[in-house]
Length: 173
Image (cartoon, rainbow, N blue to C red):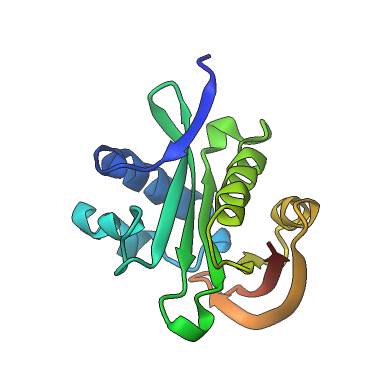
């Protein structure tokens, strides 16, 4: 197995990113607020918003984890564009391929993202939301220093009738 590397996502990575995202949304519907059916139909070009500078400059970066040339993980960081809240960033879309779970890739993506955020002028805190029952993810975020500041009840409604809460977490940089 090749060494796992982390780097920012570039335009040529969009197809592999979309493939990973589609697989994760299909396999783990409880972990994401987006649904697989809608996202599968999304045009590849729409994922350009996940590149640095996307969303009118609101996307700071999408950090990829690669096993050789294969994209096996991703984490996006967005920054509030409005002046009064530009000190806040948000982590979204944490994904690690099922084939690579349990190898510390999520931890590496999170640590890499936090280091980049700490080096970004003007940022004071970063938030994320995580499905309340996802103990592994909550534990990972807590181990990195995130604390829960709230819970959004009935945040996600799945087609099978399940209703899931989201924990809202914060890390001061």
